[in-house]
Length: 336
Image (cartoon, rainbow, N blue to C red; front, side, top):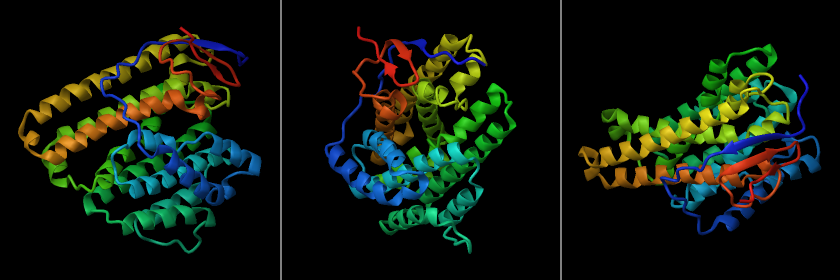
């Protein structure tokens, strides 16, 4: 297939039903993250230059944008895990399946040790151990472990689909829900806020639905705004790509569809949150705080997707809507 050197998409305005709140110590946290990453992530990259490119993307701001109110040390450690996972994603793009690494991750999460543990997993193990040492209740731990295992399963499925070379849109959607890792977000939130909402999750399935709606909103916005980077990197594991077809004949329609999914999820989230808080759960102050913070996660993730240099190649100009020109080097943002 001949790949065009420039694409154009129109992005409608985000709903912004949950307002973005910046973190008071964002840059200070990011400096610490970069210092750790410069040492811990060396094995993932073939050269210092490529590691520096990864570090220039400042992926750690994703969690900083999403969690303005959680315990700062817990947030720092969660960002380190994310840094490691993004680097693993880069590695798998270059070398293919990394089942030995994924097996070791699953073992670490279950407090086990593999005899042949890959050294590259040691930073993950050390960071997870530090997270546990700060106090992690059984409920949030089980939800973080389950979500991380699902993400690892998604990584494996993605590698299989790449190797196979043919797949349906439905297979891509199912895989991306897993491999995006976004289900860890709400599980981490319990831990970061020092909560264990296990009884509430067990008695009110709507809480799970709330978390899934947050994931859906974040995923579909990601698929729109990361499309440029992935498409021009020959990475077709993206819902927008899969929906648009091999020749991208339906690219704008695919973008519109992803946008509609995201807006529907955000609208349902806000509506259901109001309904839940007006009922029995409304008497629990922890539920009020938790759902308010899930809203912050939604807002922070959206802000990051527009801001992220990894996806756009340069600094965002603050425009959320309009015609976005996509080139191999960068996104040309709307000016009006």
